[in-house]
Image (cartoon, rainbow, N blue to C red):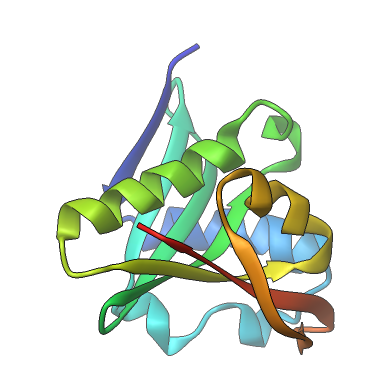
Length: 140
């Protein structure tokens, strides 16, 4: 089965994926899941055989690109899709040319996943929507 990850302007599909994972599955309040950054972010959409399965967004902050709102539907997990989304986001930032570093706020339970992709944790734990997180970074 063919996996495709592309930039997209289909924000409705990305938001539906995020709602399923963050709001319905993880209990994030719906009113805080979407924010004003969605309008300025670069969105990535992962599909297999045309079916949307995951998404991520990139926010510019000078030479730093922040990867966020990374999610994969439960039924598509464990197949390398999350790693493929992160690699696609990193490739998108390299292609853009203005970024020297990528950062993200990782759920504490996901830190080992991001470490395998070259990210290093820094700073103190913080709460985001009732879920413990820590910042992570890596050079591009």
